[in-house]
Image (cartoon, rainbow, N blue to C red):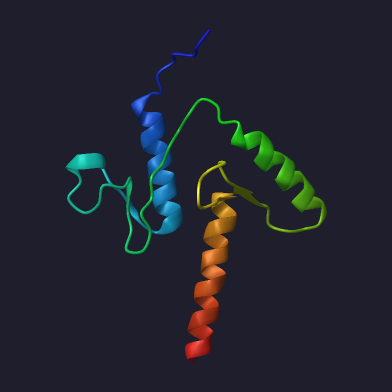
Length: 114
């Protein structure tokens, strides 16, 4: 039986707010075709950010396995996925690890300028 539970507006809006805060952006209240700044869910100067909230994604099982193995080696887990027939791959990374990595890269670039 299919799960037809609808997600409460405050739940997905809350997720958009959290993501916007982590990236130093603003939640776009008019995302999609109505947006003035961007069609994305987050207004950001460098990234086009879409937030998708679903009941269940099978990718989480793959990522959990990767994260468990990475933890044993004290490394940041990165899952690369590809659909057969597609030309490119996608990278799956915990949002906190991604934001911290960006901060480190930005800090290194600023130190190189000095």
